Structures are given as structure tokens and as C-alpha cells.
Length: 169
Image 1: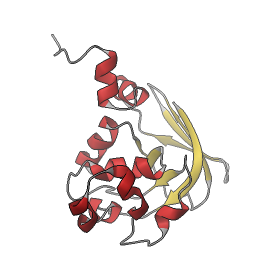
Image 2: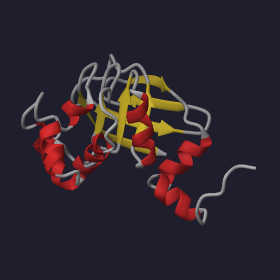
Image 3: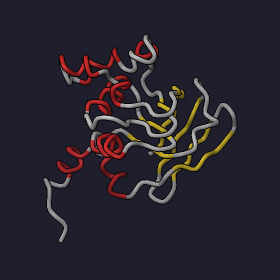
Image 4: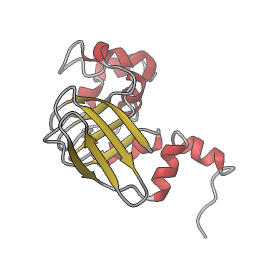
């Protein structure tokens, strides 16, 4: 998988209620309806500046807080194709993969707002190239099953391609 886009940078400890506020989730969990409110409590107007194909770049502990699946799907609905972060909350990480949103752990300290970034995810290694600054970073490799889930657009597409779920032998 290869993605390229503009870096949109947020910081450490971005919890799911910062991604989409609890008040908004009470009215609906439809990601397309919620996308205009992405990060509204910490960066009003942010969602209106997102361009399709942007890559979200974060610090440590991205997606902490509640395990609401909509936190991952609203990021996708806003136009992001991947999230790069130093670390993720486990529930957010799994929700993202299951919904087809690439999540890559790497050192994001040198990536700045607006940098052009290329992401190359393979079975054995992952590279992030900051095309603006001429830097190359190593990211966490994803297991083959996770790559396959992402390639099928999420867990539902993956299972459909296999004719449903069959437990391992």
C-alpha cells in the first residue's frame, strides 16, 4: 500500500471526545454527518480545511478515551486515508484497522503541518518519507492479515472476500 498526502498535525493524548465530541455522538453516529465537526472542541474550523487524501499525524496515545468506533470512521469520512502517530490507544487502533483506516506507529516529531508525506506499507517494513524535508522514517510493520483487511477496505470487506468467517483450525 502506498499513500501520499499533506500532513495535518495534532499533538499527544488526543482522545476520542476531541476527535468527535460526546454531544455530537448523542445525536447520531453517522460518520458522514459528523465529519464537519472533527476536532471542533480543540481546533474549531479544522474539518473545513481537510482535503481528501490528507494524512493525520499525531503524537503519543492517539485515540485514548472511549472505545467508540465512530472516532475512527469520522476521521475517514473527513477525508483522511491514514493516521501516523508515536502510539495509539489499543481500542482505537483495532477500530481503525477493522474499518479500513491505516494506522502506523512511527516517530512523528519531525513532521510539520503541511509537509508532503509518502507512506509505503509492506508486509515486512513500513517507510514514511517526508518529501518536504527529505527525511525517511521507519514505521511499524503490519502483520499480513492486517494488510489484507486494509486492502479490502476493512473487516467486513475482508470477510466478504473470503465467503464469511471460518475459525482457524
